[in-house]
Length: 317
Image 1 (spheres, helix red, strand yellow):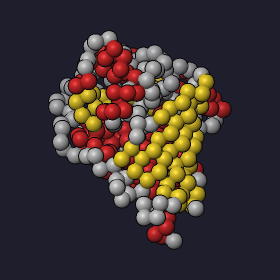
Image 2 (image 1 turned 90 degrees about the horizontal axis):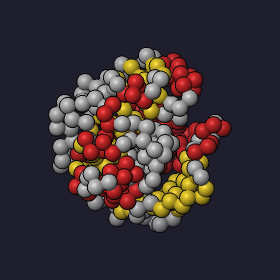
Image 3 (image 1 turned 30 degrees about the horizontal axis):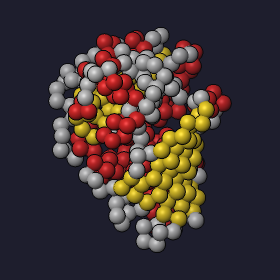
């Protein structure tokens, strides 16, 4: 049984490696080539969840599950909010063969998935990135989005302006890009071409009226039904793309709130990102269109990433 720890995941699962892995996994998912159950989430207490995500990369592919805890208060303690394990089974023998650090895979593959969606949906001339939130996912998204667009500037907003400013300074030093903290969400998105929402907000922080025509948004922070980051107006105005149609219809909070208000129907999900990537459905149709990618995260992203690390390590040994 091999164990791949956090340090090895961070060292080897670069965005250059992970982005094409996630892209191919989501195409396979939307084509029905993978097998999975809708993830199970157990609320433990306020801000604490436990999730189980089983799946298989096809009838003869690797299979396994991610067991993940989400403790939102960990950020203030300098600990990953997502912690757990990805357990891999050999597709030939059925034996468990590898355990991988799930927190680091989640951090990287989530941002890689947003980068994949951004590459497919954002305007080719998109240069200005706005990050709503300053936690781990804000940092990984800043790194990943820069792999698919020539980002020229970053603006970040968070509930603590001091923390947002400190985060902007770190990103500017790391990425060599101008980065600044905005005083409000409205200010943060005013000139943005790409917006990533990576907060723990329970009620909308971003209004549709603040978003410019032509903007692409990755909605990432809310991973279950209930907490929402953006208002109904933004959902209604956007061309809405899901990572998983079934997942969003069951657990996509922003979509479900707009649907409950009778503002949209199920057909407002125009495609899964895998369908756009495969060329089956058009993503962005015009330079003025607002596009939204709703990311809940999917086990095929975890399994594909973990299996690549395991199989490559085995092949090189």
